[in-house]
Length: 86
Image 1: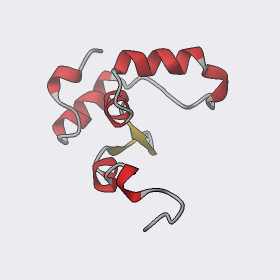
Image 2: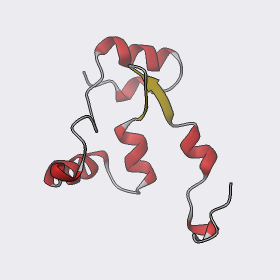
Image 3: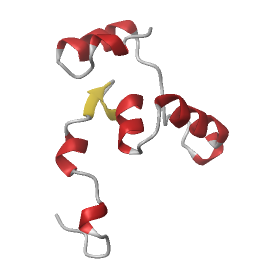
């Protein structure tokens, strides 16, 4: 799908984004480190920005994965082992 009012060269690679969307708890989610990469920042800066502006986000905007959920993503190849910090 093309977006006529957006400069196509400035848009992120749609396939990159699609491969970074996972289903967790019946929701489609992106992991913090993937969002940080997309916005070209660090994970800690992304989280800091969200905390500073928490009133702009819905209550269910972010949640922490359980160890079981993280292990499931690792086993599916969605998250490298070194990202497991639970």
